[in-house]
Image 1 (cartoon, rainbow, N blue to C red):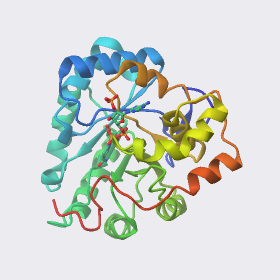
Image 2 (image 1 turned 180 degrees about the vertical axis):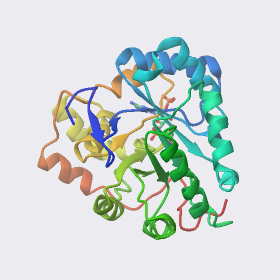
Image 3 (image 1 turned 90 degrees about the vertical axis):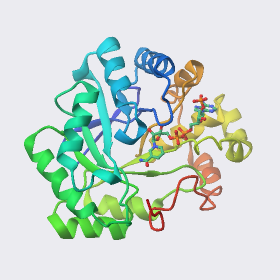
Length: 276
Ligand code: NDP
């Protein structure tokens, strides 16, 4: 796994995913996105997390083409709910937007109970994986009930489950269930999606002890607990700050402080009741 900016987590099929990625949800100004990607790549990030629903795959594709060597970058993108029955065509559109002929990780974005087509979508992702155009496949916002359903339909467990996770919502039960399947975990909204202020005061003593910021302590906690983390920032100084988490270690007392903060708060919809 390693313990530096090049740290990676091995998926069940042997593919290695960089533990730190840059999230780009709600980044739709191309100059802002290019600056964020360029700053991140210069700081050593090698993983970008996008989605067809973010309407910026094309901008991400142009930024990677301009600032990096595609084969050195791990690209994650996601299938939107409206495309569950047209996953292969949607995937080809994502490839075109991203200016690439493969993605590193392709995820079903939400289980979308509205039409219950996600098991069919998973069958298509398995086909895409078998074609070699996605190096790994997985899901996002899937709870046990959803994962059981897709495994029931295909016999294939996801390589990854990307879910909301931060100190207020630590997801231990879901992570334990996924570990049993060999499914790795990615923390989205790892800094509580703009609600860092709700947590920072409680983390401050730990941050001061290590000479780090509250954001760095939280990101380090994700890393030390074995999760991939994809903080979003368009602020160059923060993008760099969020990568400076590999030169200190949280001890048991620090971990206990973070464990005590959990209260179940979510900033994104609950996947079991979301209806879109
Ligand atoms: P984050 O938890 O990453 O928080 C982002 C917010 O925190 C922004 O307002 C950012 O501000 C601010 N921020 C970033 N770094 C720091 C710092 N060091 N100090 C203080 N503030 C900071 O939220 P997101 O919800 O964006 O989640 C991250 C990524 O996860 C998304 O971009 C997306 O890729 C993925 N995601 C996936 C979802 C899914 O359904 N699969 C759902 C939600 C997110 P600023 O940018 O102004 O610097």
